[in-house]
Amino acid sequence: MRIPIPVVAMSVVTVVGSFAQGIQVPLQDEDASVYRAGQVPVISHLALQQHLEVVPEGFSIDLDEKRLIRFSDDADPVWLTEREKFLLKANGLKFFDITDTVDTAQRSPALTEPAERTYESYVVSDKVKSVLKTLSPANLRETLGKLTSFRTRYYRSQTGRDSQLWLLSKIQDIAASEASEELASRIIIGEFQHPWPQHSIIAKIKGTNSTGSVIVSAHQDSTNSFPFLPAPGADDDGSGTVSILEAYRGLVAANFTPIQDVEFHWYAAEEGGLLGSQAVAADYAKRGVPVHGVLHYDMTAWVKRGTKPTIGVMTDHTSTKLTNLVKSLVDKYLDVPWVESKCGYACSDHASWDKLDYPATIASESSYEDSNHNIHSGRDTFADHPEEFSFEHATRFSSLAVAFAGELAGWSD
Image (cartoon, rainbow, N blue to C red):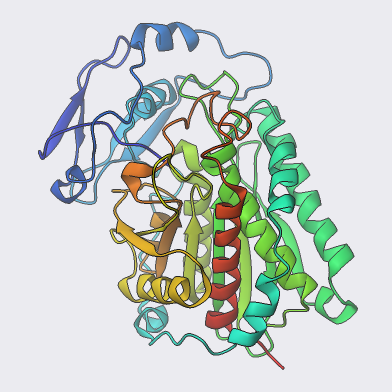
């Protein structure tokens, strides 16, 4: 997720740095209202320039490669180098890198029906509640401990690839050890390959009478504002990654046989401009895959000191009907309230689906202003923040994912 730079409501902000002079970045007025002061650490552009002079061993990136960047639906995209992209991220700016998906057509009119459906909840509440009892914060802690042990999960690094392969093996192990023989025959696990080292991962449970997919997602990569430095990414988005992994484990162990297809996605390269999720969503659109709903998580573990736990439900660039379903599921199944918030344009991977008119929404650890401000640094760990980093809270999102999958996809008897 990206914490935005402080600005006043205006249509253009100019980013000035030592190697990117006068980049004019268009901003939508509606997004300007969600930018808040004090959320971005002051980063020396000179220091960042020096950091980017040489690409160290273990990273695979051409800093002079041109990329097509979109900052708003109302403005033309601009060509910037990978080096300039890092400057933008250091300033907290949000964007789509559309270089690889610029030719993606809008979703076929034949696929718009699911977005207009009436979402029904509480259909399989007894089965959902039985799964919720099996979810364990200890599992999240153990998995996140391993995930954050990789120096960085940056998508163009070798350790980003290594962490992805470890996560893939963990997902496969759950299916092998927890699924019944019949359920195992319905589970398909694979990599969605990208032209960078780290690939996205998709685990699909085939439905018994499917007319489309129900998707729960998070992004697996991490980054540092100085991209070659360590990036443990415990909250951003290791927490979302392990929250949906525990939901997947709980459903598989419960012999969950959905009516609709249920998919768990762990995206690569969110921090590079939503690259992984854009590629996946574009592929689904091109193949005409119907999607009944996407619930995305970005940061699920932080409870700011002095606040009470809440589920942050973002209302901008999301499906209103799907967001309302998530609110109702929080009311039904969780022990904390939801709170509405906004995260701005291209703030995380749900936006890749929303821009193609698929019904998508995002939930996060709190209101945007109360979220974790240690992200994109070596301070994004759980050991250093025991009073605020809550595995119990992250497990609430596992519960919400189970409820979302069970209620929206149905549970075959």
